[in-house]
Length: 140
Image (cartoon, rainbow, N blue to C red; front, side, top):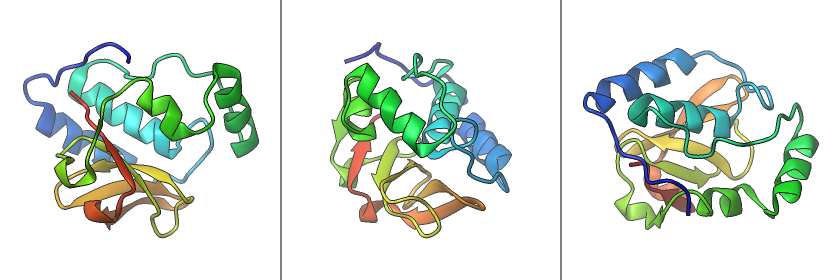
């Protein structure tokens, strides 16, 4: 697993500000996608990127090919290599979840904000119940 990251003092305010900054952003592969959103919130909370060395991509196909080149079969496999997985019911604010969200791609990544997680969809962030997620990972 990757480097251990910890949440910095005041992470709650930085997490809320980062999520607000993404309001209204449309989904764009490699520039404003669900994994980019999650990584941005982790940087805001911890000061570091838990998955720092991803290749550039501008489409779903390029993203999939990049994962294969890195030796991963899925986004979940990539994240498992960098972050500890936790039961969805134990996901806490700032943690990452994966699950379907209205307007987002199947298996979209999201960030827990309480009982809901924010996922980046075509027209910007959408909220879904955390307990609807399929998997969760601890951030700090």
